[in-house]
Image 1 (tube, rainbow, N blue to C red):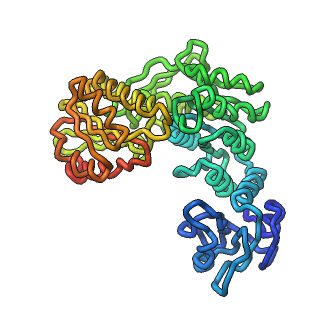
Image 2 (tube, helix red, strand yellow):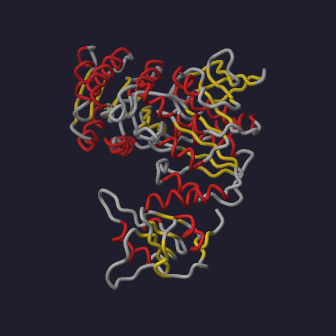
Length: 463
């Protein structure tokens, strides 16, 4: 992103300059003083837990060149040399993001979906990065604050920007899509996620489908033909499309999927009569389908497939997103702790069932959150699936997962329960045996990464 002047930020936000030089240049942007760089702008946002105005002195000490505030600084403490007052800090950030998008010359790929967004985003970035200079969303910066920060961080020489968009309410994807103004738009799938905020899957589909509705007519929609709700929503886009899935008419058609954790999933697909093989380092059929979606996005971007596939095959999964660690004693630990929902868990159980470890199939299951009134039913069904998948040992973590424990126990599974991740971290290492395949999965708020850390500390990595 080219440096913006204070005057340009003033014009973009409609704010008022309290102090400072309008010609001063701003080189970075942050809402967190811990990540603030010298010469950057600090947005003093007012949240439910913290008020950014309390950190203006910290911003000054970090070398911030500008602060955007919703009320004038108080007292005699230090604050940045330029201060702009705005009506709403989050809205001002979004307007700056919109200005950044106008300056971005890169082709922009935007994606959303109920499951697999981040892994798909990483596959797309890896694939396109084999032949293009790529900027992408980092971490979980996929909401109304993270997306403008992603746009503001886009380097001038980037040829492609891959932007992940999340939501937990209607209208949010439309807002973010207008902000991002993508050249390529992808909805990975529609799953029973965020049912706490929606009354049905069709409502979730409509909210995700806002991407297709807002997508420019000259942009390209990347469409999952295997998901009927995505297919319906894709009709909201009148322009060009690239399709993917198992369907015989898909532009990028899956031929075979190796559903396994170790050494990783496998995918073969066909595009324009040529078959491609993708051996992955990420486990599970769900990861193979994420790679298929990414391949379709690579096709939509007009990039060569061969180097893209090699890059996707070499991609190491991020912590919490299916990373596999081999421990001494032929124990394999699958760290899938970043998030969970009923269909994602069902996919993991399918991979567990397809796996044949030397020891037992072990599932450490944390509560699945944001499921609303159906939460108990979803957890009971998860316990039944675990038993049917041949799980020998289930450790259920959290109050909701006790429903899964009850149904799994009735299915003949050895069951242990833990109130929270800290308790589970003390319990699980003592239960694991030589040869076990251990999958750890739960919603982010359950913090099952503590269990993974305890397992790794117990066993050490294999030679």
